[in-house]
Image (cartoon, rainbow, N blue to C red):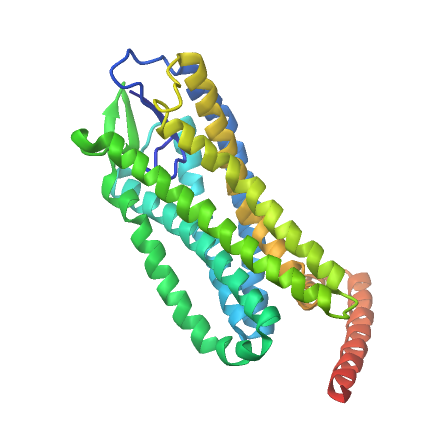
Length: 356
């Protein structure tokens, strides 16, 4: 067995090559590939994912005041993505070096990574159901889509995500292998293959199959309802729905397929070193692509809305531009003019809304 990067049981930030009873392949090329490929990409995901999700939280709390079920779910999705991102710097270091952070952090970070992964997917499902209720069952939604229900379902969702993450905490530990310290999953020897295959199936079912079924069923009904409405913005809404589904499928399906091929390699007759090497490279690449989804979430679920974009512009004017205006008078004049224009426009919008 050859370890490089880290195996998270049902979600790998690094990959573990297992060749059963046959002689192990060297794995040198894969380790070199991981050491050069993963750290810079993980770093980019951390930077952009952190900035985007922090902005979402600031705007939800400061401007929107968490007044709806949708706001509650968006807040929890951003927190899920930040949890996911929090562990990436450690895995980025581990991809190029030994594990130096101890067994406690090995278990904790494996659990945090999986908790962020599963909770993020579950809150995307809840946002899909929330949109379905709001559009298809608008009357029922008036009673069901409350902040209280949003908080309650969020608590249950975190509990389920924590339960799904338990194997990552239980099975992960540090170990000296081939003169280097590793952080990887170690299953009971007599049930090793069963655990690997069970966790791979669990990840595919919870992370791809169920979300896609719910998305397809919900958004099909949403599109039917929107097409029946005489709304100028329905085409934009339908377009956004297709983007959500296509983006989710493109980011997560390739990685889930690689995981199935890897953990069921005997069933797919993947036995040669060359084929295994290509598969593990593909797993690393598709896994990194799937991580980018946490950077895309703020754009799709938050910044795509007109109100959210307005709050974002207001935040930058008041917090960023006003700060620079202290040092540059040009910024002050420009900011004052924009603030005046925004105030007049928003006042007009409020008057129109009140009249309607």
